[in-house]
Image (tube, rainbow, N blue to C red; front, side):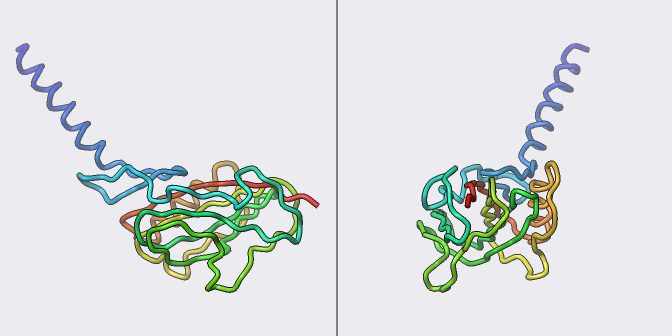
Length: 173
């Protein structure tokens, strides 16, 4: 009787370990890879920050730039959340491994800051496949809506390999 009870516990522990390899989550700085063994846990986006540093200040009308480093090729979407809770996607592009200053010079665009004033959150979303053009961030974000929208975006993208990294800065007059 005692050995069969130990066998049941051993079986349950083994099942728990097997299922733990299937966990898919979306948190800033977390990589989610397809279900199964060999799940990669190291980040793909190894650096993401405003050019003046995280928590820095920019004035309305100035252009903000970001430094990003990735260690494998893939697609990046940049998503912002204004102080009033409005979410929007403001850029998408493909990067090879390396460190870059965004926006890429070849794109000939600027990220010019506008109202409202206050805390500006920005998220870089990495996927190994391009998300369809119809999959976009738009609208108001409430409570933990940024994470749930990111999760939906990643599911709709169909990507097997993903990473998310957050940064922030402040907009002043």
